Amino acid sequence: MSLRIVNRGLQLIVRGYKNMAFPDSPAKASLCCEEVEGTPPTQAMYEALKESCQNNASYFHSDDSENGQRLYQGFVTLIDHVNTVWPLVDHVRKVAPFYDFDAKSPGNGYRSFVSVVDSCVLHGLKLSRQICTGRDTLLFRKGYFVKEVESCGQLLASLGTCITHLHTLLSWAPTGELFPTENHTPEELFSKADTINHFNHQSAAS
Image: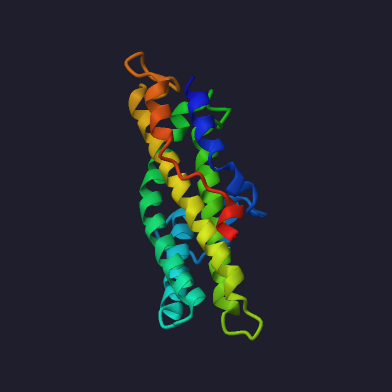
């Protein structure tokens, strides 16, 4: 039953996820980030996204055009979402191994969801760096990148809400058990799922 609950949350964001291109595995994240002593590669990816977003936010802060101000706000919002999502996904990443079938089968829904969040962050990092590189060129299209930045922020916000519900599932079941105790019903989590942002890439781009 808990798997059905998680699947319902994933279905609410799958449209936005499918419309974004994630050509590289999150396992390759360390290849696009500067290494920081004592910092795991995945955390470095999140920090690199914040740093790149801050660079772009500072750049577009003084841009008085509508798209310039939307880009500024979009990057500020992305930073806020990263700050919110990182501690949540880091906790799930640490406890996910307790829910593997066995030591030789490192896989479960918690691991999969962490991978989805990492992919979104990696996509955001590449997008932000692309903007950093091209923002001073003659052919830079602010209108196009506004839609991409805002869509990425909405998707990360939706994932943040979903991962909050994963924390609820974790608190409802003993460590290592995927299914909640009888003290909780699926309807409780279904009611919470209604708060997830129904991300739609096409509507965001219109």
